[in-house]
Length: 404
Image (cartoon, rainbow, N blue to C red; front, side, top):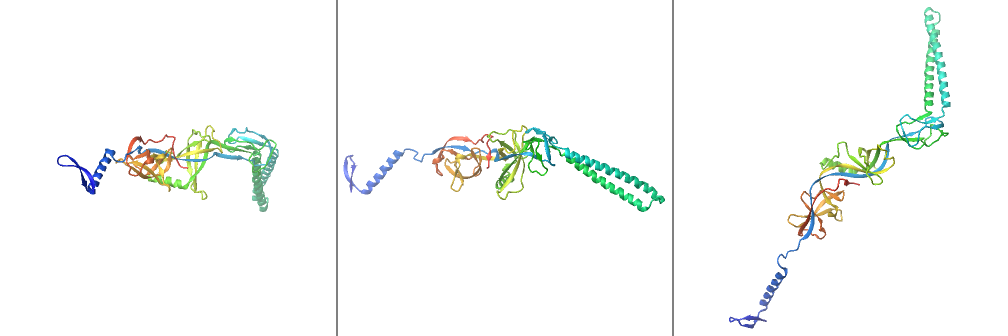
Protein backbone atom coordinates (compact mmCIF):
# COMPACT_ATOMS: atom_id res chain seq x y z
CA UNK A 1 0.00 0.00 0.00
CA UNK A 2 1.28 3.50 -0.93
CA UNK A 3 0.07 7.02 -0.20
CA UNK A 4 -0.95 9.22 -3.09
CA UNK A 5 -2.20 12.83 -3.18
CA UNK A 6 -5.86 13.02 -4.24
CA UNK A 7 -8.56 15.74 -4.09
CA UNK A 8 -12.02 15.27 -2.64
CA UNK A 9 -15.29 16.55 -4.04
CA UNK A 10 -14.69 19.97 -2.47
CA UNK A 11 -11.25 20.30 -4.14
CA UNK A 12 -9.25 19.73 -1.01
CA UNK A 13 -6.04 17.65 -1.26
CA UNK A 14 -5.56 14.73 1.03
CA UNK A 15 -3.20 11.76 1.26
CA UNK A 16 -5.00 8.54 0.54
CA UNK A 17 -3.73 5.01 0.25
CA UNK A 18 -3.60 3.58 -3.31
CA UNK A 19 -2.95 0.11 -4.56
CA UNK A 20 0.40 -0.87 -6.13
CA UNK A 21 -1.29 -1.72 -9.44
CA UNK A 22 -2.73 1.75 -9.81
CA UNK A 23 0.67 3.29 -9.13
CA UNK A 24 2.40 1.15 -11.73
CA UNK A 25 -0.15 1.99 -14.41
CA UNK A 26 0.27 5.65 -13.71
CA UNK A 27 4.06 5.42 -13.94
CA UNK A 28 3.88 3.62 -17.30
CA UNK A 29 1.59 6.32 -18.68
CA UNK A 30 3.91 9.08 -17.51
CA UNK A 31 6.95 7.29 -19.01
CA UNK A 32 5.22 7.00 -22.39
CA UNK A 33 4.43 10.69 -22.40
CA UNK A 34 8.05 11.51 -21.61
CA UNK A 35 9.37 9.35 -24.47
CA UNK A 36 6.92 10.91 -26.89
CA UNK A 37 8.00 14.38 -25.88
CA UNK A 38 11.72 13.49 -26.19
CA UNK A 39 11.45 11.83 -29.60
CA UNK A 40 9.24 14.40 -31.21
CA UNK A 41 7.52 13.87 -34.52
CA UNK A 42 9.02 11.35 -37.11
CA UNK A 43 10.72 8.94 -34.71
CA UNK A 44 11.72 6.62 -37.69
CA UNK A 45 15.42 5.76 -38.49
CA UNK A 46 17.12 8.58 -40.48
CA UNK A 47 17.90 7.85 -44.19
CA UNK A 48 21.51 7.57 -45.46
CA UNK A 49 22.49 10.17 -48.04
CA UNK A 50 23.89 8.58 -51.22
CA UNK A 51 24.89 9.52 -54.74
CA UNK A 52 23.62 7.34 -57.57
CA UNK A 53 24.37 6.65 -61.22
CA UNK A 54 21.38 6.05 -63.46
CA UNK A 55 22.03 3.11 -65.78
CA UNK A 56 21.75 3.81 -69.53
CA UNK A 57 22.79 1.33 -72.27
CA UNK A 58 25.74 2.63 -74.32
CA UNK A 59 27.61 1.72 -77.47
CA UNK A 60 31.26 0.80 -76.84
CA UNK A 61 34.10 -0.90 -78.69
CA UNK A 62 35.70 -3.78 -76.83
CA UNK A 63 39.44 -4.27 -77.28
CA UNK A 64 42.16 -6.64 -76.19
CA UNK A 65 45.68 -5.48 -75.40
CA UNK A 66 48.38 -7.86 -76.58
CA UNK A 67 52.13 -7.49 -77.01
CA UNK A 68 54.72 -8.91 -79.37
CA UNK A 69 57.69 -8.18 -81.59
CA UNK A 70 57.59 -6.92 -85.13
CA UNK A 71 59.00 -8.80 -88.09
CA UNK A 72 59.55 -7.82 -91.72
CA UNK A 73 57.00 -8.71 -94.37
CA UNK A 74 59.71 -10.38 -96.52
CA UNK A 75 63.16 -11.48 -95.35
CA UNK A 76 65.89 -12.84 -97.65
CA UNK A 77 69.39 -13.89 -96.62
CA UNK A 78 72.02 -13.20 -99.29
CA UNK A 79 74.29 -16.25 -99.69
CA UNK A 80 76.82 -17.25 -102.38
CA UNK A 81 75.88 -20.06 -104.74
CA UNK A 82 79.49 -20.64 -105.82
CA UNK A 83 82.89 -20.52 -104.10
CA UNK A 84 85.40 -17.78 -104.68
CA UNK A 85 87.12 -14.62 -103.49
CA UNK A 86 85.01 -11.48 -103.01
CA UNK A 87 86.46 -8.74 -105.19
CA UNK A 88 84.19 -5.87 -104.07
CA UNK A 89 81.02 -4.95 -102.24
CA UNK A 90 78.60 -3.04 -104.46
CA UNK A 91 76.12 -1.55 -101.95
CA UNK A 92 75.92 0.77 -98.96
CA UNK A 93 74.92 -0.87 -95.70
CA UNK A 94 71.47 0.19 -94.55
CA UNK A 95 70.45 1.44 -98.00
CA UNK A 96 67.39 0.49 -100.00
CA UNK A 97 68.05 -2.04 -102.74
CA UNK A 98 65.89 -3.39 -105.53
CA UNK A 99 65.43 -6.96 -106.69
CA UNK A 100 68.25 -7.97 -109.08
CA UNK A 101 70.59 -5.19 -107.94
CA UNK A 102 74.26 -6.35 -107.75
CA UNK A 103 75.54 -6.62 -104.19
CA UNK A 104 78.90 -8.49 -104.39
CA UNK A 105 81.37 -9.34 -107.13
CA UNK A 106 83.25 -12.65 -106.84
CA UNK A 107 86.44 -13.16 -108.90
CA UNK A 108 85.06 -14.52 -112.22
CA UNK A 109 88.35 -15.59 -113.85
CA UNK A 110 88.03 -19.34 -113.22
CA UNK A 111 84.34 -19.41 -114.12
CA UNK A 112 84.97 -17.38 -117.28
CA UNK A 113 87.58 -19.93 -118.34
CA UNK A 114 85.19 -22.81 -117.69
CA UNK A 115 82.55 -21.04 -119.76
CA UNK A 116 84.92 -20.45 -122.66
CA UNK A 117 86.00 -24.09 -122.58
CA UNK A 118 82.40 -25.23 -122.68
CA UNK A 119 81.78 -23.03 -125.68
CA UNK A 120 84.70 -24.63 -127.49
CA UNK A 121 83.54 -28.16 -126.73
CA UNK A 122 80.09 -27.32 -128.01
CA UNK A 123 81.44 -25.76 -131.19
CA UNK A 124 83.50 -28.91 -131.86
CA UNK A 125 80.49 -31.16 -131.25
CA UNK A 126 78.34 -29.08 -133.58
CA UNK A 127 81.00 -29.30 -136.34
CA UNK A 128 81.22 -33.07 -135.91
CA UNK A 129 77.44 -33.33 -136.11
CA UNK A 130 77.37 -31.25 -139.28
CA UNK A 131 79.94 -33.56 -140.96
CA UNK A 132 78.02 -36.66 -139.85
CA UNK A 133 74.79 -35.29 -141.28
CA UNK A 134 76.45 -34.56 -144.63
CA UNK A 135 77.89 -38.07 -144.80
CA UNK A 136 74.55 -39.67 -143.97
CA UNK A 137 72.91 -37.60 -146.73
CA UNK A 138 75.40 -38.87 -149.31
CA UNK A 139 74.94 -42.44 -148.12
CA UNK A 140 71.19 -42.05 -148.45
CA UNK A 141 71.58 -41.42 -152.20
CA UNK A 142 74.24 -44.08 -152.73
CA UNK A 143 72.30 -46.81 -150.97
CA UNK A 144 69.52 -46.37 -153.52
CA UNK A 145 71.87 -47.37 -156.34
CA UNK A 146 73.74 -49.90 -154.23
CA UNK A 147 76.76 -47.57 -154.16
CA UNK A 148 77.17 -48.40 -150.44
CA UNK A 149 75.88 -51.21 -148.36
CA UNK A 150 72.83 -50.91 -146.21
CA UNK A 151 75.05 -51.51 -143.16
CA UNK A 152 77.27 -48.51 -144.01
CA UNK A 153 74.20 -46.33 -144.32
CA UNK A 154 72.84 -47.51 -140.95
CA UNK A 155 76.20 -46.82 -139.34
CA UNK A 156 76.17 -43.27 -140.75
CA UNK A 157 72.70 -42.64 -139.26
CA UNK A 158 73.89 -43.96 -135.86
CA UNK A 159 76.86 -41.58 -135.92
CA UNK A 160 74.51 -38.65 -136.56
CA UNK A 161 72.38 -39.62 -133.56
CA UNK A 162 75.42 -39.91 -131.30
CA UNK A 163 76.73 -36.53 -132.41
CA UNK A 164 73.32 -34.96 -131.72
CA UNK A 165 73.41 -36.37 -128.20
CA UNK A 166 76.90 -34.94 -127.70
CA UNK A 167 75.72 -31.53 -128.84
CA UNK A 168 72.84 -31.61 -126.34
CA UNK A 169 75.18 -32.54 -123.49
CA UNK A 170 77.72 -29.89 -124.45
CA UNK A 171 74.98 -27.25 -124.63
CA UNK A 172 73.92 -28.19 -121.11
CA UNK A 173 77.53 -27.90 -119.92
CA UNK A 174 77.77 -24.49 -121.53
CA UNK A 175 74.56 -23.37 -119.86
CA UNK A 176 75.82 -24.59 -116.48
CA UNK A 177 79.08 -22.70 -117.00
CA UNK A 178 77.12 -19.60 -117.97
CA UNK A 179 74.99 -19.83 -114.82
CA UNK A 180 78.02 -20.24 -112.57
CA UNK A 181 79.68 -17.29 -114.29
CA UNK A 182 76.54 -15.25 -113.57
CA UNK A 183 76.69 -16.29 -109.93
CA UNK A 184 80.00 -14.44 -109.59
CA UNK A 185 77.85 -11.30 -109.40
CA UNK A 186 75.59 -11.77 -106.35
CA UNK A 187 72.33 -9.83 -106.67
CA UNK A 188 69.53 -8.95 -104.27
CA UNK A 189 66.72 -11.55 -104.29
CA UNK A 190 64.05 -9.03 -103.20
CA UNK A 191 63.54 -5.29 -102.90
CA UNK A 192 63.94 -3.81 -99.46
CA UNK A 193 66.45 -2.47 -96.99
CA UNK A 194 69.79 -4.22 -96.66
CA UNK A 195 71.60 -4.62 -93.37
CA UNK A 196 75.21 -5.07 -92.33
CA UNK A 197 77.63 -7.00 -94.55
CA UNK A 198 79.35 -9.95 -92.90
CA UNK A 199 82.27 -10.00 -95.39
CA UNK A 200 84.62 -7.54 -97.03
CA UNK A 201 86.65 -7.57 -100.20
CA UNK A 202 89.21 -10.37 -100.17
CA UNK A 203 87.10 -12.79 -98.14
CA UNK A 204 86.67 -16.37 -99.30
CA UNK A 205 83.06 -17.47 -99.60
CA UNK A 206 81.72 -20.92 -100.36
CA UNK A 207 78.49 -22.28 -101.73
CA UNK A 208 77.95 -24.43 -98.62
CA UNK A 209 78.44 -21.74 -95.98
CA UNK A 210 75.63 -21.13 -93.47
CA UNK A 211 76.50 -17.50 -92.67
CA UNK A 212 74.64 -15.00 -94.80
CA UNK A 213 76.65 -12.27 -96.51
CA UNK A 214 73.84 -9.79 -95.73
CA UNK A 215 70.08 -9.72 -95.13
CA UNK A 216 67.47 -7.81 -97.13
CA UNK A 217 64.12 -7.05 -95.49
CA UNK A 218 60.96 -5.51 -96.87
CA UNK A 219 59.67 -3.17 -94.15
CA UNK A 220 57.08 -1.07 -95.99
CA UNK A 221 54.65 -3.29 -94.10
CA UNK A 222 55.35 -5.23 -90.93
CA UNK A 223 54.06 -8.40 -89.33
CA UNK A 224 53.11 -8.54 -85.66
CA UNK A 225 52.40 -12.04 -84.35
CA UNK A 226 50.65 -12.14 -80.97
CA UNK A 227 48.98 -14.89 -78.99
CA UNK A 228 45.84 -15.01 -76.88
CA UNK A 229 44.23 -17.76 -74.78
CA UNK A 230 41.85 -20.02 -76.64
CA UNK A 231 39.24 -19.50 -73.89
CA UNK A 232 39.05 -15.81 -74.84
CA UNK A 233 38.58 -16.79 -78.47
CA UNK A 234 35.69 -19.07 -77.51
CA UNK A 235 34.14 -16.31 -75.39
CA UNK A 236 34.22 -13.88 -78.30
CA UNK A 237 32.66 -16.39 -80.67
CA UNK A 238 29.82 -16.98 -78.24
CA UNK A 239 29.22 -13.25 -77.80
CA UNK A 240 29.21 -12.70 -81.57
CA UNK A 241 26.80 -15.58 -82.08
CA UNK A 242 24.54 -14.27 -79.31
CA UNK A 243 24.43 -10.86 -80.98
CA UNK A 244 25.93 -8.95 -78.04
CA UNK A 245 29.05 -8.09 -80.02
CA UNK A 246 29.27 -6.95 -83.62
CA UNK A 247 32.36 -7.02 -85.84
CA UNK A 248 34.34 -3.77 -85.66
CA UNK A 249 34.54 -2.54 -89.27
CA UNK A 250 33.97 -4.14 -92.65
CA UNK A 251 37.56 -5.20 -93.28
CA UNK A 252 38.00 -7.18 -90.08
CA UNK A 253 39.30 -6.10 -86.71
CA UNK A 254 41.32 -2.89 -86.52
CA UNK A 255 44.50 -2.88 -84.44
CA UNK A 256 46.01 0.17 -82.75
CA UNK A 257 49.76 0.03 -82.11
CA UNK A 258 51.41 1.49 -79.00
CA UNK A 259 55.16 2.02 -79.23
CA UNK A 260 57.78 1.05 -76.65
CA UNK A 261 57.84 4.60 -75.25
CA UNK A 262 54.06 4.59 -74.77
CA UNK A 263 53.28 6.79 -77.77
CA UNK A 264 50.57 5.87 -80.26
CA UNK A 265 51.64 4.76 -83.73
CA UNK A 266 49.67 6.83 -86.30
CA UNK A 267 49.02 4.00 -88.78
CA UNK A 268 46.34 1.45 -87.76
CA UNK A 269 46.99 -2.21 -88.44
CA UNK A 270 44.63 -4.93 -89.63
CA UNK A 271 44.13 -8.44 -88.32
CA UNK A 272 45.26 -10.63 -91.23
CA UNK A 273 44.32 -14.05 -89.86
CA UNK A 274 44.23 -16.23 -86.78
CA UNK A 275 45.88 -19.61 -86.66
CA UNK A 276 43.61 -22.65 -86.89
CA UNK A 277 45.64 -24.63 -84.36
CA UNK A 278 45.77 -24.21 -80.59
CA UNK A 279 49.24 -24.52 -79.09
CA UNK A 280 49.10 -27.63 -76.91
CA UNK A 281 51.74 -26.28 -74.51
CA UNK A 282 50.29 -22.80 -73.84
CA UNK A 283 46.66 -23.27 -74.88
CA UNK A 284 46.85 -20.12 -77.01
CA UNK A 285 46.03 -19.10 -80.58
CA UNK A 286 48.39 -17.04 -82.77
CA UNK A 287 47.06 -13.86 -84.37
CA UNK A 288 48.90 -12.09 -87.20
CA UNK A 289 48.56 -8.34 -87.63
CA UNK A 290 49.75 -6.41 -90.72
CA UNK A 291 50.94 -2.87 -89.94
CA UNK A 292 51.72 -0.23 -92.63
CA UNK A 293 55.19 1.28 -92.27
CA UNK A 294 55.59 3.89 -95.04
CA UNK A 295 58.06 6.02 -93.07
CA UNK A 296 60.08 3.01 -91.85
CA UNK A 297 59.44 4.11 -88.27
CA UNK A 298 58.92 0.50 -87.22
CA UNK A 299 61.89 -1.85 -87.25
CA UNK A 300 62.09 -5.65 -87.16
CA UNK A 301 62.46 -6.97 -83.63
CA UNK A 302 60.85 -3.91 -82.03
CA UNK A 303 58.58 -4.68 -79.05
CA UNK A 304 55.13 -3.06 -79.29
CA UNK A 305 51.67 -3.39 -77.75
CA UNK A 306 48.62 -3.97 -79.89
CA UNK A 307 45.06 -3.01 -78.99
CA UNK A 308 42.81 -5.31 -80.96
CA UNK A 309 39.25 -4.13 -81.64
CA UNK A 310 37.21 -7.26 -81.04
CA UNK A 311 33.70 -5.96 -81.54
CA UNK A 312 30.99 -3.44 -80.75
CA UNK A 313 28.61 -3.78 -77.80
CA UNK A 314 25.47 -1.79 -78.57
CA UNK A 315 23.87 -2.19 -75.11
CA UNK A 316 26.71 -2.01 -72.60
CA UNK A 317 26.03 -1.21 -68.95
CA UNK A 318 29.03 0.62 -67.42
CA UNK A 319 29.50 0.88 -63.65
CA UNK A 320 32.42 2.62 -61.87
CA UNK A 321 34.81 0.05 -60.47
CA UNK A 322 34.60 1.58 -56.98
CA UNK A 323 30.84 0.89 -56.93
CA UNK A 324 31.40 -2.87 -57.38
CA UNK A 325 32.28 -5.02 -54.39
CA UNK A 326 33.32 -8.65 -54.50
CA UNK A 327 32.75 -11.46 -52.08
CA UNK A 328 35.41 -13.91 -50.94
CA UNK A 329 34.50 -16.30 -53.76
CA UNK A 330 34.78 -13.55 -56.40
CA UNK A 331 31.10 -12.77 -56.95
CA UNK A 332 30.34 -9.12 -57.74
CA UNK A 333 27.58 -7.02 -56.17
CA UNK A 334 26.39 -3.40 -56.33
CA UNK A 335 24.06 -1.33 -54.15
CA UNK A 336 20.91 -0.13 -55.90
CA UNK A 337 18.59 2.65 -54.65
CA UNK A 338 15.13 1.20 -55.20
CA UNK A 339 12.04 3.19 -56.18
CA UNK A 340 10.69 2.71 -52.62
CA UNK A 341 13.58 4.73 -51.18
CA UNK A 342 15.44 1.71 -49.81
CA UNK A 343 18.84 0.22 -50.67
CA UNK A 344 19.20 -3.28 -52.04
CA UNK A 345 22.35 -5.30 -52.73
CA UNK A 346 22.14 -6.71 -56.26
CA UNK A 347 24.40 -9.52 -57.59
CA UNK A 348 25.89 -8.69 -61.01
CA UNK A 349 28.29 -10.17 -63.55
CA UNK A 350 31.19 -7.76 -64.08
CA UNK A 351 34.21 -9.53 -65.59
CA UNK A 352 35.45 -7.03 -68.21
CA UNK A 353 37.11 -3.67 -67.53
CA UNK A 354 36.41 -0.64 -69.70
CA UNK A 355 38.70 2.21 -68.69
CA UNK A 356 37.92 2.89 -65.01
CA UNK A 357 34.60 1.02 -65.18
CA UNK A 358 33.24 -2.50 -65.32
CA UNK A 359 31.03 -3.81 -68.10
CA UNK A 360 28.04 -5.36 -66.31
CA UNK A 361 26.57 -8.07 -68.53
CA UNK A 362 24.00 -9.37 -66.04
CA UNK A 363 22.10 -8.04 -63.02
CA UNK A 364 21.24 -4.46 -64.09
CA UNK A 365 18.73 -2.89 -66.46
CA UNK A 366 18.16 0.56 -67.88
CA UNK A 367 16.93 3.03 -65.26
CA UNK A 368 18.45 1.26 -62.24
CA UNK A 369 20.10 3.67 -59.79
CA UNK A 370 23.47 2.30 -58.71
CA UNK A 371 24.92 3.78 -55.53
CA UNK A 372 28.34 5.28 -56.29
CA UNK A 373 28.92 7.24 -53.04
CA UNK A 374 27.87 6.69 -49.45
CA UNK A 375 27.55 2.92 -49.82
CA UNK A 376 29.94 2.04 -46.99
CA UNK A 377 27.21 2.37 -44.30
CA UNK A 378 24.33 0.79 -46.18
CA UNK A 379 22.40 -2.27 -45.10
CA UNK A 380 19.99 -4.29 -47.18
CA UNK A 381 16.56 -2.64 -46.98
CA UNK A 382 17.85 0.49 -45.23
CA UNK A 383 16.26 3.82 -46.25
CA UNK A 384 18.35 6.10 -48.46
CA UNK A 385 18.12 9.70 -49.55
CA UNK A 386 19.48 10.44 -53.04
CA UNK A 387 21.43 13.70 -52.94
CA UNK A 388 23.39 13.40 -56.20
CA UNK A 389 22.29 11.85 -59.49
CA UNK A 390 24.75 11.25 -62.34
CA UNK A 391 24.19 10.22 -65.94
CA UNK A 392 25.79 7.00 -67.15
CA UNK A 393 28.23 8.44 -69.72
CA UNK A 394 30.90 6.31 -71.36
CA UNK A 395 34.60 7.03 -70.71
CA UNK A 396 36.69 8.80 -73.33
CA UNK A 397 37.01 7.18 -76.74
CA UNK A 398 40.61 6.25 -76.01
CA UNK A 399 39.48 3.91 -73.27
CA UNK A 400 38.83 0.32 -74.15
CA UNK A 401 37.64 -2.93 -72.80
CA UNK A 402 40.98 -4.60 -72.25
CA UNK A 403 41.47 -8.35 -71.93
CA UNK A 404 44.98 -9.39 -70.98
